[in-house]
Image (cartoon, rainbow, N blue to C red):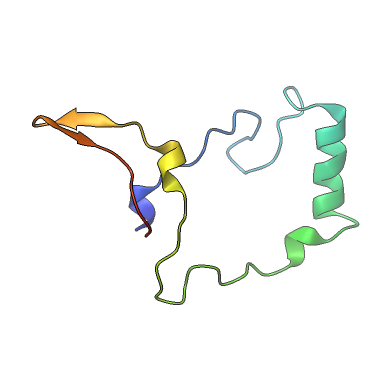
Length: 80
């Protein structure tokens, strides 16, 4: 299923998922330091949001560009 999703555009992140200091604002860098440091937010385990074998509205359509295929318009629709 993960192959269906494209990573949302994040031009300020480097390949390690950290902010690029040459592109990020000072406040964003402070927030990243707080998230990874004193706040210890990065240490919390991820919640099992969509691992319960149920359908969930992931709103993946935000990252999907409709395309015409064989005369039919392919769009993102429904839950996954």
